Image (cartoon, rainbow, N blue to C red; front, side, top):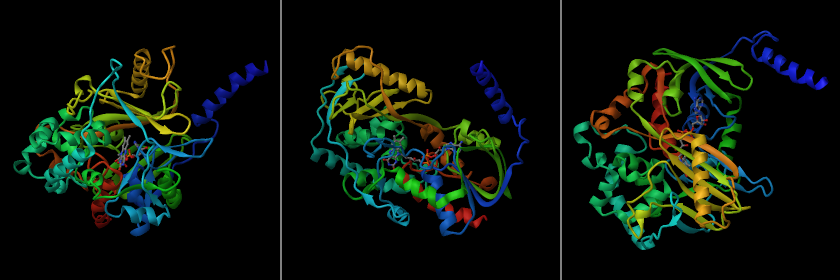
Length: 479
Ligand SMILES: Cc1cc2nc3c(=O)[nH]c(=O)nc-3n(C[C@H](O)[C@H](O)[C@H](O)COP(=O)(O)OP(=O)(O)OC[C@H]3O[C@@H](n4cnc5c(N)ncnc54)[C@H](O)[C@@H]3O)c2cc1C
């Protein structure tokens, strides 16, 4: 009887409380700030620190999750305390990046990865793919040649599109398919590195428009590969350690677990109603300027009272989705990196790549048989679909005898999992040719609103910090 009472009455009481009946509804808290920022990933967190601590502006940062850092994912092994990064891995040493680490007392160290042996397999069939990589010298030589070709265009694409050429001046190479671009300049030997480091995020990058692949792997990445630009991560605690330090610094100026319910944006300021989705409490923020630091997808911008022009411009973007995680099935054998490769790539057709959606790698990362997984999908691959895809690949690999066990109905053991999407915002060559980037950047500053993040800039941690540096003087000038 008691059990029945508890199971019936407690949910009813909880429902009354959340509906605001049992306790009188609290009036929303009101904040008056110079700048409101939506999104506490690389771009939002950096801007918050600079605006508040270096320029003395008051800020409120609205973050959906209970932490800062966005696509940074650090798994801490509960037994050993060892951190494993399965989202962002490295920070390119660009602009103020080192100083930004130093101001939080976060020491930097070169990134070391587990030594792995790569096995190329077609994950659709389970058959091995006998891919023979170019020699290291050939790969570096191709990367240097790549750099020679792309370096003159750096200013058009990085850190953002401020200097993107008017339609008649767009280099014609920007708008051709990437596979054609690579063949034109004889850069095939650079493809394995470009694909494995970042290019895979676009799916089959050879079919994508060149300028968007150059956004994913352009001058800075090539310079990092040939040793002209340094890269690092926090010496201890994984990449989240940097964002934990930022959290401490920003304190109560971050509204965690919160999203915007609705907004009113005008030329003289912005009003946001924000709700904490755990407590249900609401906060009204009056800000003189707004910085939007999330991908401008239809879902993300729904509460942001977009006008007709903003809707038209921002809905032009298409995206891919990326998922990353850690699995620890005993069937995966250390220290192997199982890499998905299209059958036609053997022996050296580097431009033949898997088509979306696909699992890219299941790669040994250390610890107690931990394997890092990356899954790339088109805009319709949701979290369930991504997990189902890996399960399907797992069964194919088991049945084909590629793993350390035979098939007995095993299920993937997820140790951790993260949704990184939508990302790699891009538009068609026709839209670029019609002046899309000029229309996009004309939104900057309109209705007291500024835009940062991957759709507006080169999508790496420190290039976004650099891009923020170009926005901050404009934001301040409008306060
Ligand atoms: C698997 C993977 C590996 C990567 N590795 C690297 C790397 O090694 N080095 C590198 O430089 N870059 C790397 N990147 C790219 C890098 O992560 C991005 O450039 C960067 O995270 C983008 O920062 P951002 O602030 O624009 O967006 P995000 O990092 O996505 O941050 C957005 C933030 O906004 C929050 N948010 C989202 N929607 C809302 C909403 N409606 N309301 C409130 N808050 C919201 C999110 O919770 C998140 O905290 C990697 C990306 C992926 C997917």
